[in-house]
Length: 381
Image (cartoon, rainbow, N blue to C red; front, side, top):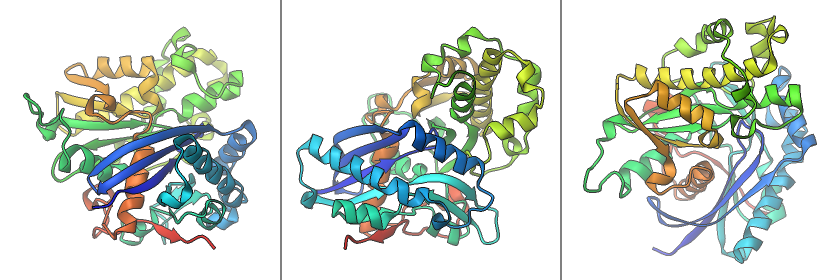
């Protein structure tokens, strides 16, 4: 089969910027990463995204937000820069697959909807490349949550096209292997049949918003500020009583739910606490909600492979190793997929699947009534 090149774009709930990956496919299960690029959002864009996600009552369609058009040239520029870095002309690219920036996720609404900003038509026109976006909609129409989307990619890469790690001299039973993504929101995939995957709750979103409010920093590098504080167990208990954590899967959430407004509502006296103690407590909230979710699936030991920005936070990783003491915990790099780029690679795969009419949702994950092809296609004018 001839080689096909797709660009995957991911700007997640951490709102730090755009991960772009140029990926070569010779089948839907065989891929090769050619080049990657991170494009940081400027301060004004980050501020507008966070404001849109936390003040989204009026948003019902993507077009209701000016960010839908504002973000599209930023995504297009990331693609153009990535191709220049790789030394590959746009004429060689089969498609761009862009997740878009989520500002509202309402899978329980009647009818359900989910808003990912970044106009696909504008991206296609600016790059001259066929563009695939709006990957959640078909699953929502089929009765699913529309998220998480990556478990299908995890299945393709880590089960269907099993890595050497899973089929080596000491093969690992897929029944106790988990892929954990810690972005703004954290989600876990249990690599078993039937596949299970769901959002566990906040990953980095509360950590990033709290340090931004208190210190004007976009994130807590290496968890250094949180490490100066102590966990406030009363605050932690208040936060963990939120109904989302006890809900059964399939379930999904977003930063429009878990944000500073949520945090203040759960503990109105928050500003009377030492700021670094709050940060330490939010780290523990991420650790506990993830660990509790994994343990609730009935496995007391196994392997957890971590990707996303949280994989680079020593405090989160240390906390997971403490709470999941009988689990081997490592980054997805150990499985041959770089942890910082897994989602961007995954969206390139989703674009490939859409181009070839391959169903790419997992009904056991999202709750959809059937497997469907995900994505909408925009041709350059």
